[in-house]
Image 1 (cartoon, rainbow, N blue to C red):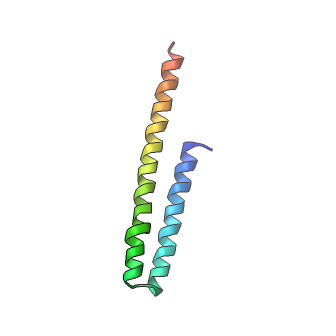
Image 2 (cartoon, rainbow, N blue to C red):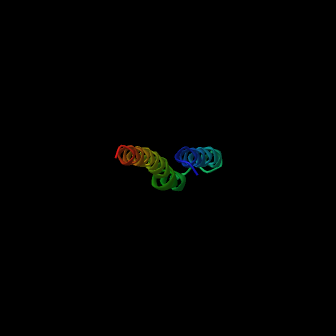
Length: 72
């Protein structure tokens, strides 16, 4: 699988999570649901954003290493 495929899957997973969470919150809106959003759903968004940035940085490092190896 390519980096782009991995990033797309991550983004899609978070999109689905958010959609399902919004649907659930229509019927479940109390302090427990707010805690769940704060402690689990929101951090998942942040974790995916960080993972995507890390994938981008890794792809750049691999690309740079390949260029350096090809130049020798």
